[in-house]
Length: 354
Image 1: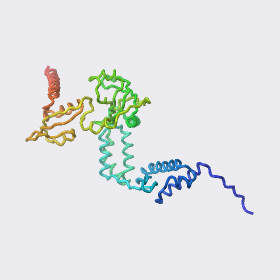
Image 2 (image 1 turned 60 degrees about the vertical axis):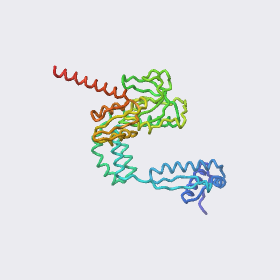
Image 3 (image 1 turned 180 degrees about the vertical axis):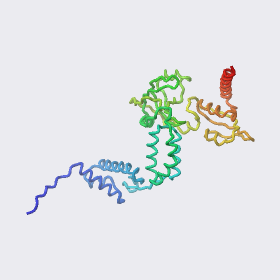
Image 4 (image 1 turned 180 degrees about the horizontal axis):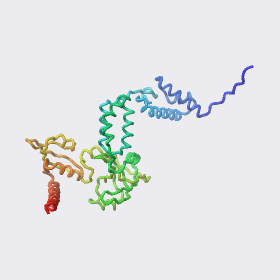
């Protein structure tokens, strides 16, 4: 007399789907070409179900990529009219490149110490072996130990990502922003067009939709984006509205960055100055759009395309190593600022002597 056996239960829809996905995945791993309609006929489902199965496998492969260090993608082959698995090894960063990235992250001082420690550990865990990780950590340990939190508020990565998505999807944002001068918190409805990082800060470039607010600015109806420091944004949310900018007219962060030395608003302009310092390469690094138009012993004549008023800060910081030659308005502004600086030192000298 044999033991009683439990009767076979019919497979549920979820079980059938799981089995189907696993079999498709196994077929991909075996190098087989998957025709969507043929697979649909084989499993007695429609082609849309097979497409969802393939998308699920793609999502799984994407998640596995970071863990295994191997890129596997499901690609459509037009000639063969089917899908196949393509495997590609990830090119690894060298130890020197990983160390350079860690140093740049520390030098940026864009994040709190807690954030930096977390980011460094993730980079090291993903990019180097345990032995190499210990070697890199030795080089950055002292700098990390003495790392001080930046004076500005901690950047919220969620706000950064929300702004990025709004730019991509052309979604209108409502932000609460703390102004620099009087620390007043104001509400702004803006069309976000770009994200940038410069000199310790992340910036949101956005166009104000309220014309009355724009008219109150230094230059009425300024066609260029307004600059908002992301750490000064107290809240950010989507309004549900959309805006449209043709691709050819979209804001180009790369071109803007090449013309901007400090994140101050203003207009594009061409400037000329003489440089008397020891390293013209440092100037050309600061002004990617600059060119040397004349070079004599001890002096280089340089022309550059810049954006905004921040260039004055750099020019003044160079002291006697630079002399502005054009435009005349900028030359006069530099002279006036030097005069105000001189007057302050005269006042200090008078108080000291008194």
